[in-house]
Length: 322
Image (cartoon, rainbow, N blue to C red; front, side, top):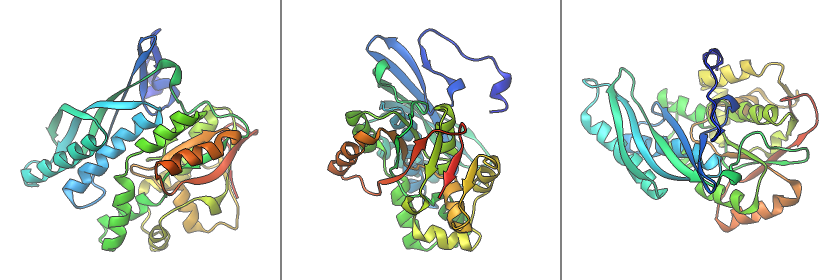
């Protein structure tokens, strides 16, 4: 962000959402009825299995499109691969995993680019479409909106434990199942009902992304800590010190922007700051539409839905966790 502030702002009459808004993807109007939605994301490995890593990385990249309420259509692979350190079959498995997850999403892989890199990285550049009048951004929340989260937290802590060989196999399987799950059905439900704002929860953690939404919407937010879902194993691993550097960075960035009740444990606090990979959608929906949204999600068999708080008047971007 410090670098972007030094660059000229992209402006065009058909640029609906650009880099200055801090949204999940860019949106460019092609016609009165259709706009392109574009995003790119890649991650380092969060699990040891290359095929599963490919699936998770692809789901993570696709999530930005879903957060805008759009439909992803095509994607290109982006990979950094340490030639000479790993067998080329590892890259094949990663790409196969990404292709299978893209196929599940109805997305066509149309190409890509790989470079020789010291550190393994993989993700997708994704293009989708949406009606220009139906774009969902992170800045449309209003007072009284209920805040809904569609996946449990704790993936950053568990990924750190995996790298340290501290995670049990059943914990790895549980976390991988969360991370590789598409946010497609959640996006369909919020489009059907109509919501005011949305973003996905990734590297900035729950509180970081909620801060962005509240600040962009010129509101404050209240979070009910006992309503936030997380994997129990993450609490146990946090107590053992398995907290990623990104989560500490999130906490440091939000000093003065978040007030946390003294009754909340340090481990749960770090769950709220935890840097996620392929997390859920964070939705701000009008109170009178909440039941309709929950019903639409239930009909699509989306589990782990949590109503974790609400948008309120107050200091811009301020979050109170009680």
